[in-house]
Image (cartoon, rainbow, N blue to C red; front, side):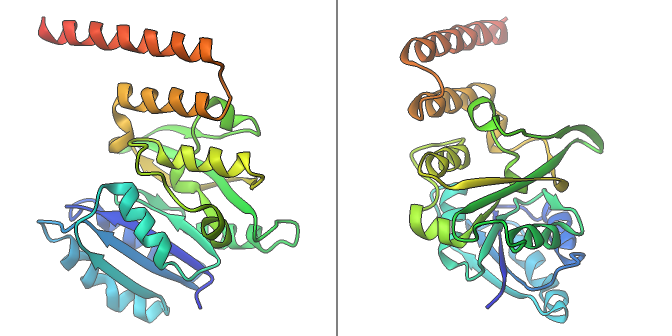
Length: 252
């Protein structure tokens, strides 16, 4: 059995996928499996993945490819999680890429004797890129969960947690990962932070719509008690006004 399972959801990712895959091939830790869940891409995404399989085989890494219709990126992630055989599960989207020692760092933390392997989620630092320049470096302190979302591509979860609490709620369209984290923490799962750059994220993708992002964000914060009813209504009203103003500006 592999120690770590890495999942990549793809759809028409031919042009973006090379960096994601090559970062996995550079890993200093090789006891992992790679699971790709594709939403029936129309480009050469599958051919691209297949072309790398011999390199993974030389590294001793098994590659599993599923290409079938899905209900979106979180549905694809859920499929990958259900297939995962590793004790620790990471998700890296196409066009994101891990630091070369990311899996080694995460496994060492997972097995350091202080971390509860059956009840933990581990995260690190995310470097954010805009085009080919570093935009910022995202760190999250102990109180991040009530204030902001987690750097998704740095996030590794014990498979035992997924088995116990389930995975992503498909009714949450944009921030199902943040909803999952809040759900687990509210039931006693431990968050473990590592002060190391784990992954790189390129701006763009499902979470980039301002209004969709904050609609889900405020809803989740209210759901788990980080904001009260009054504050939630105020934030929803402000967001609605901003959306109306944005439409007016676009028409001009």
